[in-house]
Image 1 (cartoon, rainbow, N blue to C red):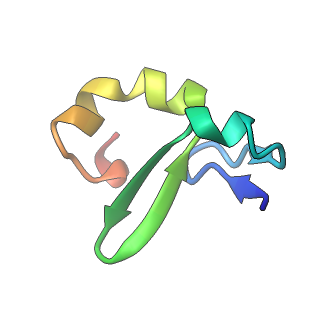
Image 2: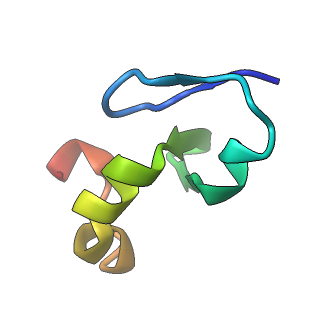
Length: 54
């Protein structure tokens, strides 16, 4: 299944590559973040800030 990063819009179709992506549920909606966006925003993710604040 292909996924798109909810921050940068990167498209990933390789299921093995998706294993390094992060997921979150914000306001009842599942969001996916690519490895690069996850690394850039790790502190905000750990602080449980909504992605709109990153």
